[in-house]
Length: 231
Image (cartoon, rainbow, N blue to C red; front, side, top):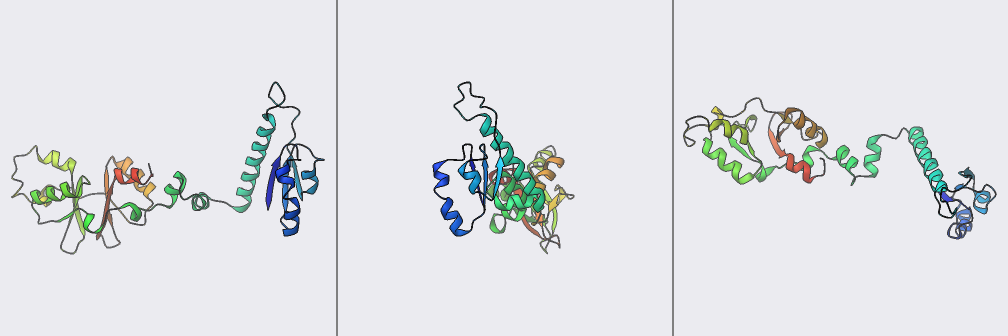
């Protein structure tokens, strides 16, 4: 289907393709301000968007006519959206590079750090070892796991500030003694936008990612969401 817009209905660039459209059997919908124009007569469906006069004081520049065409175009789009049951996800699929597309299509698995980039230490590791991992990986936190790789806690920059209020030996103290046990975690299939909302609600800067058996598979922070265009 071709939707052609022309206030006069006599635009040369459009009229020249009319024979081709007919030959190919392509339906033509015309939106014009002249019901008796060539474009209107040659179309299967004509939508009248005529105006009494242009808002331009000289009556030359298209103003009222362009507004009428824009309004009718929006009305057609909304009517078609409702008729097809078009959803936000459908919109995202056709606009994957836009902000809405990223919010509805990007998952945690797409942005998380995994493998060698994932900060993690054993629950038997010293606080010094945990701090080394945090410095190297640069996410402002490290996951703490047991021998099976299951998440048991997290140690963050905030935990470090609280720890420094105590007289400690970072080489002797185990990270498990000062970690946060009840830490927030998300599955890899969660939408990144939902993870962002969770972080904002809980006032945290990072999240750990676990599978169905609580095994650690990834981690990410606000900077990753920002780079991905989610925020």
